[in-house]
Length: 60
Image (cartoon, rainbow, N blue to C red; front, side, top):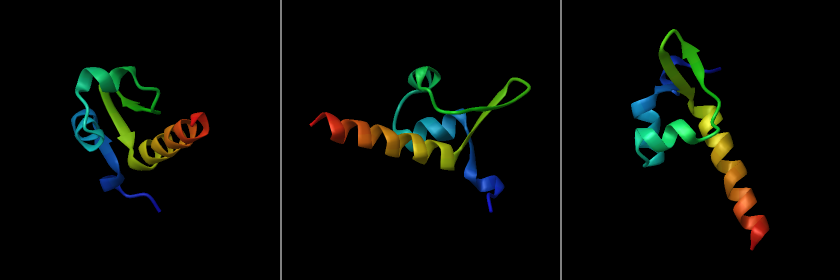
């Protein structure tokens, strides 16, 4: 079951990925919009990362 701690702000997500906020805006990671606020589920981020890792491995 998902908890509130598994939802991150833009700043937390950028820190988790080790990128700047501007770069995060261009990534196709699913977002949750609440008014002007943007949140990211940690599950979605990790799923996106796994898919990217598989794409990279397939190109080798």
